[in-house]
Image (cartoon, rainbow, N blue to C red):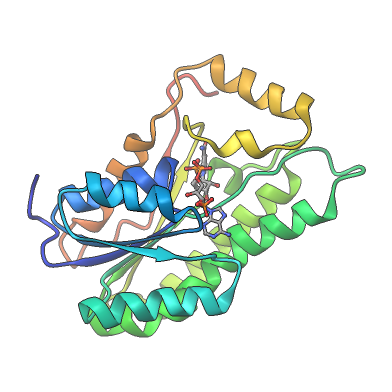
Length: 244
Ligand code: NDP
């Protein structure tokens, strides 16, 4: 346990599993007080028991702008400020474009792209006051589009585009915008792919390599947000060594 982030206040979306959970724990271990958002609040309560520092559990659906605003407001009401936002919540419902389920496309856009925009919109006035940081969890799919991942990639390219424009708007006011682009990480992400063949193919690809662990990405986030104020880590691409 370190105190490098004490007394910072962080909000992590999608903290009930995978990268978000590991990031919330890592920020807590680094001394931050962390608000954790997601829909499976039982998992968030369990995380709160495990974390060394104070945790605020937020029932938060990032695809609902009102839910996002309430989560940000509750965090600031409770702790008085907001220093770090990690926009992590996401779903990957990949598969071919032909005959795709449009409801899955809507869900990916609402969660991965709009959810992250709503969170920035609600949090930005507070981050400007605290001269804080926004960490956008994008993906290698936000840099390279590939067959089977058209809409997932479109959401992540969107996250990347938004992050750069936001950076230009707020960097001179002291707010740092960090884009983190993970390669394959061992999490629940692929479990939600509906098409069994496509799900099996994604899992087989992951099993063919030593994937990253959620803690590897959490470490990148902690690195970015613990640099001195004059250092803006704008982009971190982290792939498994085995991923070509
Ligand atoms: P997980 O499925 O383990 O975690 C996804 C998290 O997002 C869960 O905590 C889930 O919480 C949350 N979430 C999903 N929908 C919503 C919603 N509507 N509102 C609030 N929270 C939501 O996957 P990962 O940890 O892998 O994914 C985290 C991020 O990392 C995603 O943005 C993903 O695209 C990105 N990423 C992952 C990679 C990988 O290989 N795993 C590679 C590159 C990027 P709950 O269901 O409780 O709401």
